[in-house]
Image (tube, rainbow, N blue to C red; front, side, top):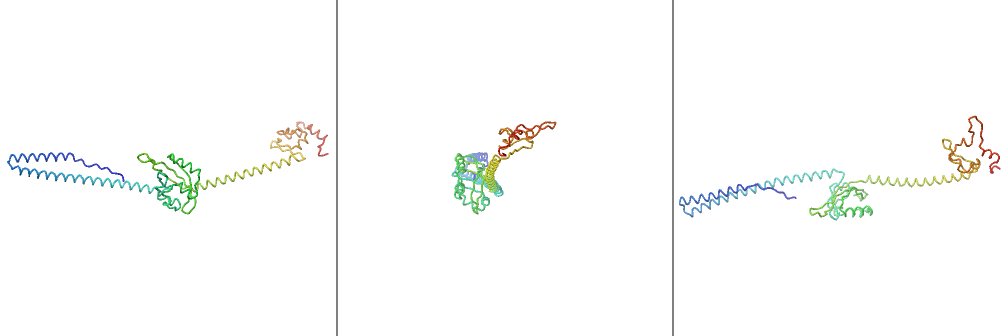
Length: 313
C-alpha cells in the first residue's frame, strides 16, 4: 500500500501562548511570594504546582493533537482504500466483460499475472498452468512453436520494444488449437530497470482458420489453373499439329472478316507466301471487288485452276 501523508494540525501558536502563560505565572508567584513575604519553600511548592498543572495541560494538548492526527489519518486512509477498491473493481469489471484478457510478465518474460477471464478465453485451460512460464515455453510444449515468427518476436523483446498483434497458437483446455493475438508495452521500475511487459490478448481462431482456409483454397486454385493452362496449351498444340498437317486448306477469320489463321495447305492452294494473308479481308482475297459486278478472279486462283494442287493429281 502506498504511504499516506497526513498534515498535523498547527499548534505552534498555542505552545507559545502556554509558554508565555507559564513564565508569567512563575514570575507572578515569585513576586507575590516576595511581596507577601511567603516562605521560599512555600513559593517553590506553588511554582511546582503551577508547572505540574501546565505540564498536564500540555500533555492534554499533545494527546488532542495525536487524536486529531489519527482521526485525519484514518479518514484519509479510508478514502484512499475506497478509491483503490473502486479502481480495482472497475478494472475487474472491464477485464471480465471484455473480449480481451490482460497479462503481465516479469523480466524473463514469464507470466506473473493473468486476468480472471483468461481461463474462459482459453477454453477452460488452467491459469495456474501458465503462470511462471513464458509464452514461448507454452507454445513449444504444445507443439505449436514456429521458429521463424518466434525468432522475430524474441528479437523485439530483447530490444525492449512495444509490439502489436503478435499472433501465435497454443492448446486450449480441450486440447484443441486456439489462435491468439497479443499486444504489449515494456515496463520499467523507478530506477529505469526493465521489469517485464504488460498487455492484452484476444482470440482470433475463427479469423485465422478462415485465413488459412482461404490461403489453401487459393493455392489449390493456382495449382488447378496451372494444370488447366498446361492442358489447354497441350490441346492447342495438338490441334495446331492437326491443322498444320491437314491436306485441306483451313482459314479462320474474326467477326470483321479478317483472316487470323491460315494453315500451310491453304497457302499452297491459294499460292500465297506463308504469313502474307494474316490481317487481310477474306472477301477481298477470294471474291470480286468491282462495283459493277464484274468478277475479278485472283491471279493466284487462275494459276490454281491451271495447275491443280499436287495432292489432287
